[in-house]
Structure formats: C-alpha cells, structure tokens
Amino acid sequence: MKNIIVGQSGGPTSVINSSIAGVYKKAKELGYDHVYGMVNGIEGFLNDNIIDLDDYLSNDENYELLKRTPSAFLGSCRYKLPKFEDDPDTYKKIFELLEKHEIESLLYTGGNDSMDTVKMLSDYAKENGKSQKFFGVPKTIDNDLPITDHCPGYGSCAKYIATSLKEIIRDNESFNKSRLTVCIVEIMGRHAGWLTAAAALAKDDNCSGVDAIYLPEDTFDLDEFLNRVKTLAETKSSIVIAVSEGIQTADGKFVCELGADDRAVDAFGHKQLSGCASTLCNIVAKETGLKTRAIEFSTLQRAASHLASLTDINEAEAVGARAVEEVNKGNTGMMVTIQRVSEDPYKSETDVYDIHDIANVEKKIPDEWIDKENKQMTEEFIKYARPLIIGELLPIFKDGVPTHLVRK
Image (cartoon, rainbow, N blue to C red; front, side, top):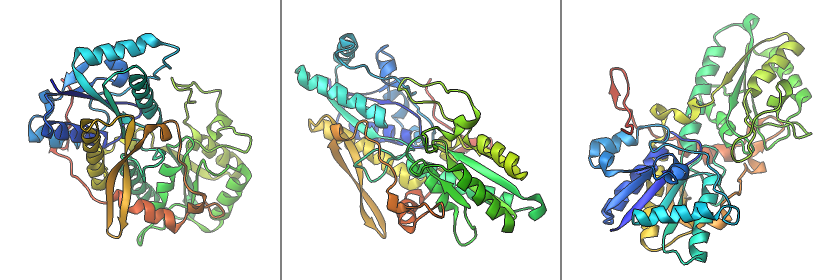
C-alpha cells in the first residue's frame, strides 16, 4: 500500500483547505492508494482519529467546494508536541499509528509551531532509522514564516482587511465634523504586523485610506498617539486608525493590558490578546472627550472565504501539491516555500527549504517598509502586498448564503 496523511494545525485561514485539495489531487495523480486526513491535527492523530479523503473529494464538485470552504475542514489543534527526551511514548505511538495505517509520509499544514512539529518528527525518524517522510506545508495569516516570500492565507486576510477598512472609512465619513468619531480597528498580529500593514491597501483613487497604522515592530508611545488623534481632530470629520493587537509600550507591556488584568496563555505560552482597540478608545474618550468606536476584526479576518484572494487560493493549492511531489521523491524534513519570480506581471513558483531554518523563526516587516514618522507603510510594502490580494473565486450560493464542505 502507498498511503499519505495530511493534517492542519494552528489558527485556520480562508484558504487552508485549498492546500488539502492540492495534497489530495497530486497524491492521486501519483498513485497513492489512500490519502488520509488527521481530524484535529497531530492531537487527533494520537487518538487514531483519521478520515479517508476519498470519501469527500473523489468528485470534482466537492473538490471545488472545499476550495471555497473557510476554516480547517479536517479540524485544527494547538497541541505542542513534547521533546522526545521528555515524552518518548508520544513518539512511539505516532510511529506505531503510521505503521498501522501503512502511511509513508506525513504532511502538516501550519505556521511556526506546526513547522516545529515537522522538524521534531523528521529528526526522530532520521535518528531512529524510520523510513517515514515529513514535510511542512506553510499556512499562516500572520505571514511571519521565514525564507518564503509570503505565506498562504495572508493574501486573503489582507484582502478582507483592506476591503473592510475601506467600507469602514466610507461609513465613518458619512457625518459632518460635529459628529466626528475616532474609529480604532484592531487587527491580528502578536509580534509581526503584516496584517495590520495591509490596512494601507485600503487607500486608492476613491479612498483616502486610514489615518495611521500602529505595528508591533514599532514601540507604541501613548502620548504620541493621543497627540496625533488631537491633531487629526482639528481638521478632519472622520478618523480611522488601524492597530495591531500586539502593540507594546516601551516597557514591553501589551497595550491591551493597560485596561485589563493578566491574560491567560495557550499551550505554546502565548498570552491571549484582545481588547487593544477598546482600551485605546476608552483612553481617547477620557483624554479628549471625542466620540470613539472600537472594532475588532477577530475571527472574521481569517474566515472570510467569500472574499478570498484567487492568487492566494491558487498558491495554497500549489504548496500542497509540491509537498506531495517532494515526499514522493523521498525528501523529508523540509517546508514548501513560495518564491516571487516576477513583479509585473506578478508570478510565483514553489520551492523547498530545510525545516530547521524555518521552525520557530519569526519574520517581521523590514524597517524600510515602515514610515514610522507618519505611521504609514511605504510604497515598497504596497508593491509587495498588492499582488497577493488580486482575483476572486465566487462562493457557491444556496438559499442566499455560501455552501461549504463539512465532515460527516
């Protein structure tokens, strides 16, 4: 038997399922007998919870529907694989399950922590004479994986952010100066501001764009922020500011903590962040007396498959297919990357890179792409990000709402 398995991990995206589609299609083309899916990632696999994707994707209609389905079709997890020396039984169980189902290769779709899982499993296999192959399929709206030009999931999220901000700006400009509202929009991004930077894409020939963009790469100065708001209020009838959930003050404190108690942490030790916009709105209202409105995109920005970028969908499908090609050739311990080979017209190709140089490494926005004085993005960033949001794949509607493919 020639079998392969794929799993999804971490925060979903609106195009992560396109990678699953790419894995399935390429694996069938290469003659794999079974293409299995882990239900809820490696955590589900440890409970032997898997499905055969033939039950869902053997017809073209479902294949196309999967590409239009947001979130993780297979189910995700935030399970931190322990180090072998701390828990050898977990590794023993994983490889027993791989052998039980005659699985030659395991593909894992995710971000930094998921790539660490691929690294540890491939290292264990190499050190213990195991034949199974392990490969990373990039996915993260945060766009913070190194080596790759960008990450599948980012373009669609950026498209949603730019579109929604343009609509918010239009709404906020509806009233005259006597009804001035300071609208602060909170966007995901713990340490890297790629998503918040996408707010710059709202500006075009029929939209003035956001008034300021605050990123985690730049230390947040509350006094500067308040002075900027006051100055804008002197001449404008509408103020819209984009802030990252992860902006921090000079002492390393998250801005969202200025108005909240200590936050809980997840399995990876990441502090739960939210409420940055609300905290800032409360401060602005207190210090200036201006009317404020806080908007938190939260899950909406990563689940909006109805506004996914076609470029993003196609690239997500391509990285899944490339991972299958690589393990089929016997390669392991690597991640698929996307390389930009042409700017005008935009064109990309897939490549592969050693997982050890990728896992747990976080890529931030280059300083030269940030206009820190004016709290805006430079033209270099716009040139980088704009092609990633181009194109649409319309949902398949039923009874007025999009139809999705779901597990039985």
